[in-house]
Amino acid sequence: MNARLASAVGLTRSFLVYYGIPFRIRTLRRTYTQFLGPGDLAFDVGAHVGNRVLAWLRLGARVIAVEPQPSCVRLLRRLYGRNPRVTIDPRAVSVAPGPVTLYLSARHPTLTTVSDRWVNRASNVEGFSHVRWERTVSVPACTVDDLIARYGMPRFIKVDVEGYEDQVIASLSTPVEALSFEVLTADLDIADRCIDHLERLCSYRYQFSAGESLRIDPSGWVDAAAIRALLRSLPASITSGDVYATRSAHPHGAGSQRG
Image (tube, rainbow, N blue to C red; front, top):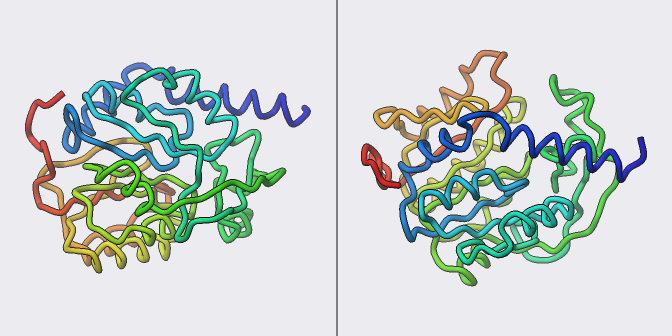
């Protein structure tokens, strides 16, 4: 299979997974109604094919879809380029502005990353050893602070950048109301650095959602020490998930019927 065909197949697979599963967008909407409502601003850092963009639009939010992967940018523009509440920013996010190297996996576009460390480690991690990053491309990068300066202060930030989450969060110098970052349990040092930086900004409460379950318990928020302990107690069957962080025990909109 040539590279162009492999890329098309990989992107089509991602689109079907993220848009084709019944009720997935409804589940996303129910999860994020705890954080977002009409008129709120959200940053989707690592937007990929944009399923969260769609869910947030249905909540009435304004969305900055930040995605450097060229094939995904083209798809996002086809899907949302004419929507006045969506801005597509075709950059990576890093600890400092400037060009960065993007490692592309044609068959697994969800695993495209800026982290050479993660690429080098993945062959020894269960569930990732089959992934190959066939080529690289140089892309421009900005910081989260740059995004805030350009678009305004977001109510919520989602960070899903395959092993580079700590560098993205390190580029934030102002506490935001709420955010999430992906966790790969094979590399919890990244999660630790994310939490360390957030706690330097202000005191947050945390919750872990395993895999793609999108489950958040309104009464399940814990402090930094407790979320670190929870992540290290996860069974081997859980290889990834998302940590949600909010500046208060009861996140914006929790328990309400917004959206």
